[in-house]
Image (cartoon, rainbow, N blue to C red; front, side, top):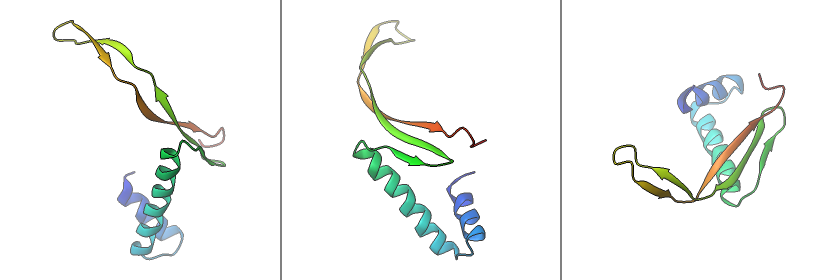
Length: 86
């Protein structure tokens, strides 16, 4: 399912126009992204939990040259599905 499919599904199940469903989906995604940027957890009961964490810097190997390189630290998003999701 892609974003367009999600918008169509929300529009159909909530009896909304596609324009209103698009606004609702984009607002929800923006709220989740905003919370993650502030290092807050987003817990949706029955669905799962989104959280941001920092992946530390590490050493890697360039597969072409076999030289060691340093991979910079970065923020990543983690998702833990709820037990009853699937």
